[in-house]
Image (cartoon, rainbow, N blue to C red; front, side, top):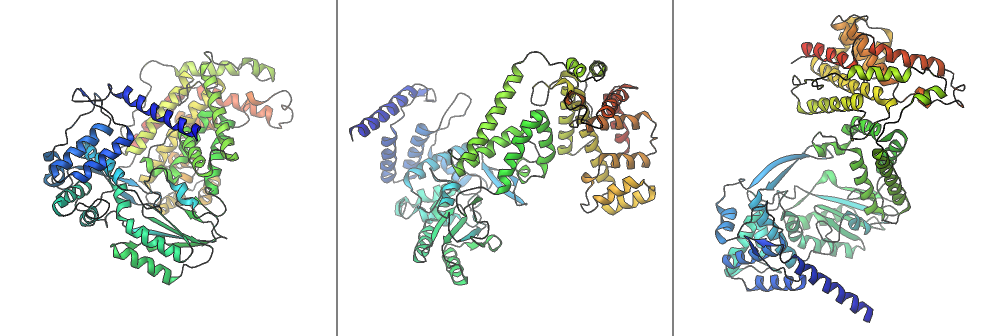
Amino acid sequence: MSNLFETSLIDTLLIDVLILMRHHKRKINGHPIFIMNPVNYVEEIEKRFQAMQSVEDFAELLQFVYSQKLETGKNKKNIHLKTNVLTYYGYILKKGEGYIDFEISKKSGGKRKISAPKYVLKLIQKCLLELLSVLYHPHKAAHGFVLGKNVASNASIHVGKKFVFNIDIKDFFPSTSFHKIKFLLTIKPFLLKDEREKIAQLIASLCCKDGFLPQGAPTSPIITNIVCRRIDSKLSQLAFEKKAKYSRYADDITFSCQENIFDDSFLEKIRVILSEDKYEINQKKTRISNWKQRQEVTGVVVNEKKNLPREYIKDIRFWLFSWEKFGELNTQSDFEQRFPQKKGFKRYNGVTIQFKKYLHGKIQYLKMIRGKDDVMVLKFIDTYQKQERKNKNMQKKNEIPVISNEVASVGLDSNLHSHIINIRAALEIRGDFSIDYSFIKEQNWLRQLNSDNLKMENCGIRNIGDDGKFVDPRDALSDFCRYACFQIELLMNIYYKKKYPNWSDLQTEIANLKASRKVTQDFRTYSYNNTINALALKTKWYIYAKTHLIAENSDLYKGVDAIREIRNLKTAHRPAELSESNFGSVPAAHSYQVTYIEVILKGAQTEPIRNYLLMFVNQLKGTMPT
């Protein structure tokens, strides 16, 4: 007991010391303020809340919370929460003017409307959140927006149950009205009734937008738990009577049991309980899963233990393997091609993030679900950290590795390295290297083209990848052509999507052109997708050239082919990867070596590769449909 007491005393003293250290750093309007001990702070809040009788007393309480809890800085606007400020944002401000409305994409499709409060209203709501958090303790079945609880704790309750029943409340936020919030503030634990009812009305007004609970306000999460208190109590009692488990995360309700009790009568009882509070069940998201199926609770698999879907773990393995095998630059490039097809892409409004951030976030979430001591989690973290250290070590190197000795050691053409140097020198011309893509009006496409163009120049001229690190000079030319190819392919896709909005139109065009057998076969192979993106670049370039009478022996046609061929050799058996031990075991090694050199020379015969890309862009610019 003595050790426990000593530890508690030390912790308390440390907290007090830290508070005193911050005393001179925290100021409001130039005056230092005193930060209270956490225990005394809670007691003071409760004491002032019980004693307040008017809106003026409420304003003073919010000002106290603001001074104690909200960080202030030189670059932030400090406010004084007077009565007139609160009444202005609660009653006088025109509908919707205190919020910024925007939409974000849902993973399942569709849009979700978000109403984010502006600066002053947001500060007021943050103070209200702090105040309500001290005064209100959520029901034990609530796991959303509760300190110390999350989706993992919500799922833990239902692990190992034979039957899991998932329900979703339909249109929860629009169904939570101003009158409902005001009423709940007049009963326990708040008791803002009689002469204090004006305070309840003001709080409800400050928390609502157009008479309903907005999705995006700081106060909305705790209001969610307040309005669901009675629902939680009744559904918990129902679960207890049926020997089942119950939990709620925001508007997601879950029951689980060892027996299948989830019949129509059970669902009807839930419907009645929800209807008493003017809520409805979302039939589209109601489902029962047994032990033979994948059982999920707020995205967490709960069949035998807390876990994430197999696809989630496979995705982590894939990107870790790619990072180890092909390096950071190539993995980022591959990620930029694959990420738009992922559901998470919608969350970023068409912007591709760095694959390392994506991977780190996924590993951390897996760690939260499976636990920090899980073998798989530890392995993933170890692999990630090893690759990070490897990248840092490579970045510290001041000189770029050369390959002339490697080329000589396998008996390849010793001029290969000099050919690459010469081509790179030809590319390094004075002036602005960027290509003008202003004729593309769609912002997502324009952003991607400019991004690939910048990466192309970094790889081709400065040996720097898109992550700011050096690239192996063996890959410099291939990387340059790879990013040039990305631009060509995206421009081709834009052209075809505008030119042939219907797949049948393109089918007719190919029939009229009497295309080669290989082109026709490629078209048929991917016709089930009915998408331009699936067609090979060679096929798209062939159709375009035929349509616009571009001769196969022209500089433009040969230039685009050269870029494409060098790109294709990027991850194949490049000469530098062959050694004396395996050189003879690769049947096509010698012919491949010659082809590689010939392709490089072919790319430098007439004009620099960048000029090929410029020729292509100018050609496409003149033929791009509006």
